[in-house]
Length: 315
Figure (cartoon, rainbow, N blue to C red):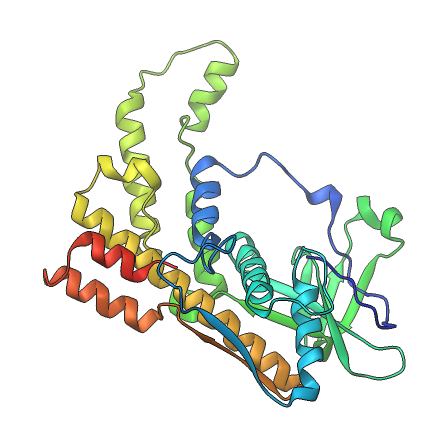
């Protein structure tokens, strides 16, 4: 996340990332695709509003507090800040960025950066949730030994009042439930079990192994692990279920994304209240989680076609 602001602000206390704990190859293909499909299209992408031509965003409340809310949203985005940003695009970028963190980590952690001359919050600084502990009313970040020289710190203590912690919505399992799904997905690789990989690496193929049977068993395992969020497993799912059930899962995924979208916007509004910013984000024109469930029910009852159900749930 970008962390720039024209105001004079305190420096972040939290360490943004730990290079020593970064691992580029530890996520298998199932996990990577699942994560990408969870956060992609939580909000409309690239200004293309398919079924949502009436999609609109408003900031309602005290007009004097609107610039403060916009600065908070700008600090969450990766693009350049503008003095008069398009509010709709700004919210799209902000929500999608938070959704990306939720999909990868199960939560997004930000430090509230306050002004030097006042105690008002003006910016959110995102940082890694690794090595992070919550003790009483403080968050303690333990710096790995290999990174202490780089950051010139061994640990960081941040008061709870200066942290914004948003997790996956409870209806989707919350932080712990979502992390369990990720853990399950990392158990098995599509390439083969670990013992077979070891034999191939040593050029000693001893085990009698059916790649086709293994692939099917992995697909069934993944399908069961992700059914609550409706992941359709892209093209591989079509090999193990019917066209109707494939659409059922696609609509379920749209419902899960709507839950994430509504949860993030609600949490942003609560953050504004917490920072005494008297405004509220109001979004219209996007399918709600409740509407998607009703659409899914009509699809199951045969009242609408599969294509119409998909269109009604898309953003």
